[in-house]
Every structure is written in structure tokens, then in C-alpha cells.
Image (cartoon, rainbow, N blue to C red; front, top):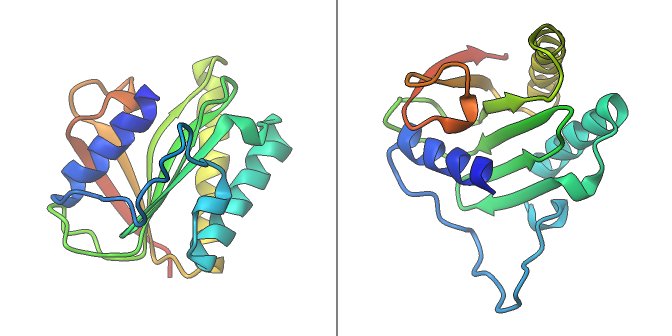
Length: 167
């Protein structure tokens, strides 16, 4: 959950506004965290493609994935030890970093494997995200990394953001 909380904090800092859940949480002890919580069909399709990629390439079970929907987008957090990612897709503007709408932010990637393996797999994953951006009409891919601890993207408090226009 720490990686998830750090990701939400990072989104708040980057966009300079509080991200609030799109719907009120049910009073049950454990609200759903699977892909069904994402109501936007375009975002759901993009996240489903990412889920499939993680399963096909790293054997990531759906139980290791958590989704959350916000009024301005959705996020995916993977807690798989082999290849864990923190990804947000935003559909609204007004950010401190002046990022446009339709932006996918990759905020963290970790692995129990060595750095060379992780670098290779991260490169492949970024290529996938670029393709998915075009397929699902997401115009930009942003990469957010820590200014304070560049070797630990999950601990980002302030981020350097690089934004790539996808189409």
C-alpha cells in the first residue's frame, strides 16, 4: 500500500490539486480494487491491455493488481515482486507541471531482479505504453522520477516529469 500512497501523493504534487475518488466508497470493509472499479471504457481498455501484458510477460496474477478510479482518471498499482509498476492515466488538466489532459504517467517500476534485467524490461514496457497511447487515444506519456532519491521511484515526493507526445 505504501507504493500506492506514494503514487497518489505524486499525482497530487504534479497536478497541484487533490485527486478525489469519483464515487463514494461503499461502507463494506474492503471496497473492490479490480478493474471493474474503472468506469471509463477507454481507460478500462487501456488498463486491461496493460494487465494482459503483465500477465503474459511476468506471470502477474490479477490478485497483485489494484485499480482506483478518480474524477480525473484512474490508476493501476502492481505489487508483483518480478515487475511492479505504478501507473496513472489522467483525463483532466490544470496541473502545476502544466501537463495536458490525456496523459499516462509512469511513476514507478521495481523488481527483485537485477538492474540490467529491469532496464531491459522497462524499455519494452515503455514501448508498449507508447503503442497503447496511440491505440486508446492517450496523447502523452509522462515519466516521473524522484529528485530526492533517483534510485527509488516509489518514494517520489517531488518529481521530474518528462512528457512525450504520442500522436
